Length: 257
Image (cartoon, rainbow, N blue to C red; front, side):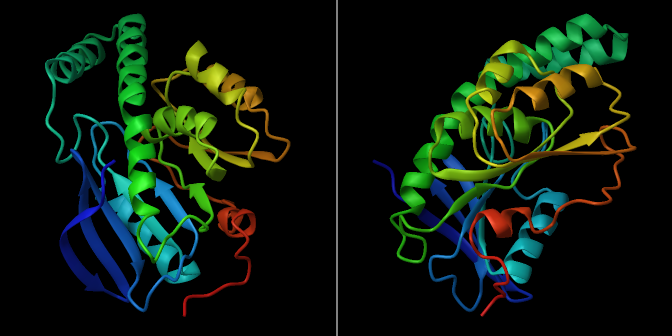
């Protein structure tokens, strides 16, 4: 059983940031500098080709900590950030780049599905091991509510199968675009917790109808789809339910100490 080993610590704008490793997995934990006292824990995933400290993720993490007093954790997906790449990772990245440059849509989809499925198969047990280790920390414990705070594309391709098998997650935010293949749809059918789904309406790489089919597959009675004009990397979100996780993690109206 792995434990959390902290490797660095900084504090800025009332947010404590601690880098850590669990086994071979590199992660970062953000919490109120004044102490979290077993506040809800939000898991955040990053997009494909990015890492746990990409600017957008860090901005969302800081906002979640300072606005609600939650704790936020992110880890590098396999072959991303501080994680070494396998030969499979290198080949998949090369194949994706070649297919995109050549405009080979079908090949791009096939490689993307195969690679994201492989990443999810590796990342889900890593997330579970990270949760096990974090719950041993006195400031988190086993009673803190846990939510999945999203992450576009790869963050969702990993987050959906994780939420499908992890009973500790009680609410989740996902987002397109990625290819909604059958295994992902089957995982969505096992998800019954409240879901908020964010969709870039003009996603240029993925068929919109496949993403809508994925949303339809969620078994959640409480699920919301928010679609805004925008492409894969150019998106301005309007109308997002910022209090979604607050309500579902039973901390409505709570402010940082």
